[in-house]
Image: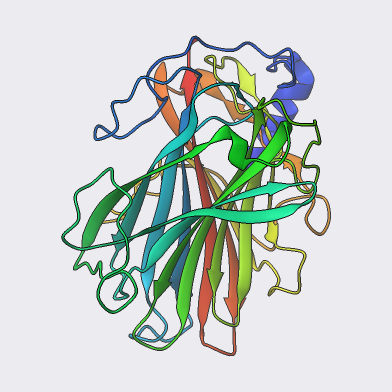
Length: 339
């Protein structure tokens, strides 16, 4: 908290800040995805960033830690063309799913196109233990996925649909949703939502509902817990000085449980032993933002970071007293520093 206030004061006193990230923001050249894991070496026609959404079901320190209250994590990440224009070819995504200390049997990932006239699930890829990566497998003989993991394991899926699958041109929203039934009878889901400018020759109708990047964790009874980046687009070009993106860490405004904790850091590694929290910018009870489902700037002094790739980790936690554990939604966004 003190570091956060000091950084805000520094912004006010020095006037050093990044320009607003609007339609005139600098755009880097197309090519490899920023922050992509080594497995995805694709060169894209537009600038993309590897954004990771995560769902956690883990107890707070004062909650019992057992097989019901601790289901670990599920990660859902992809090189997304956030706010980029796509006017030819198919809409194609390589999607990574990671299970970390998660006892569930991963089922499938769906890709949903949301426009001003509604939402359509356009493709479903199942998570299969024996399937090759970068494919879109069908269900197993039991009608679902069969991917299980001990420790940390990953699978890659490839989604591809023609641009005509979008019912309109303009700013369209894409949802990825991963489903993991757990042995305790509950279900964990991770969701990644963002907007892409689609030009497919159809009438223009921008999707205006929550038009920003969001990562969400969902768990039975708890509902959604969400971490979002409200400054759009996320930066393609390197940042410098004090970068101040607007973020929102809160519950989802649909009757989900309230946000009980919010956490923001740079370059953490929670899979390390012991876990590395990174450079912590915010760690406090309650949501992060001005009001319910609101947002606020977070000051990041990039001059304290090495030049090169870094990751902004946003986590919102929503305690579930009925089930005795805590649902968390995480969004991890890569950014480049050049001072």
